Image (cartoon, rainbow, N blue to C red; front, side, top):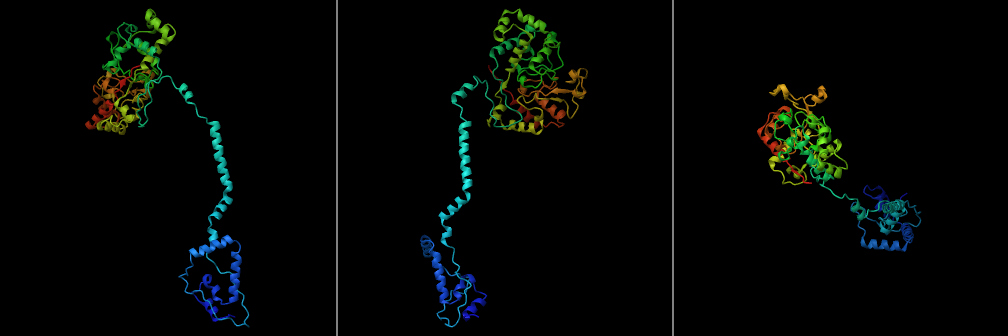
Length: 454
């Protein structure tokens, strides 16, 4: 059954490796010759492959496997002539990986054969993108951009380096200088009042922060009104005008201030009559506004002038634009405390206020602690008679606030420190801390800007 004991020993050994030693376990020289012949036929497929295999054998000589205790066994004893030749179950000896499988040329060829469609699609997409870019997105000539640019920009928008609830002041662009100058003259014209002695500038003194420094305004006949005069600076950024918000625009508010008993005590018929009798006003209206004085043109001229009354380049605006040295440590601490206490929820936007209506005394009843019970101002309720509007006022702008004492609608806070303490107590329900109050006051003073010159 077995040709030799060596054959039996190989098949029964637990350490034998069929892959490495099976072909050498049969000492049949005819089988060895058949194996050599089959290898020659395989190597005869390509002379180049034969050369590569020979070079590979020279460069990397075969090293016996250290894991197999049996090395190739070659018997010199010939088999008996009468013994039949057993069929060889394994014809070719397992070989090491052929160098042909690692040839770079063959790898590239396989990649191209497998992915040529994808490469073709990518190339076509790139070509299509270039064509569309040339046809549809032609660059605009520099001459066209220059011709379409605005002729004049009064002020450049602020650098958005710091994104904060309070934004830098940006003046209105393209205001007509001639109309602004006409509005300035009308703003200071005392002949428009009932007694010819009061003008808009009487209460809105530009040298006093745009207000008058009085607890409440004083008008014709020396009568005092119920409310403190708000500053005219940056009033154009308020979403509504007046403390109770009853006027939506700068133009509309002129009606009430012109006829108010405690203010100018006049009317439009008298104003237009005075202006038409003045030859200089007549010529100026004709020249710059295209018509003789009228109610609509007077409103437009004065409102245009008021829109020019903005203040820029405050220390806080400089800090917003990226100047790290604009504020000191107390001012920065005051601003972050201002935000932490949620004052910023009402005092926001370019005017640091003027963007909403809110009830005064959110945490404690402000009006019950006042002494002037006989002349309470109930805010928007006075104009609407809606209960929800009782004690509701427009949130004031904090721009230039250090220049506009006394404070609140009734002028009850004589100093900025007292105003901050009052708001912390009545609006926030907190006991004022002197250190915190001083820091918030330091921040509020950084909102003082400079009037622009047109």
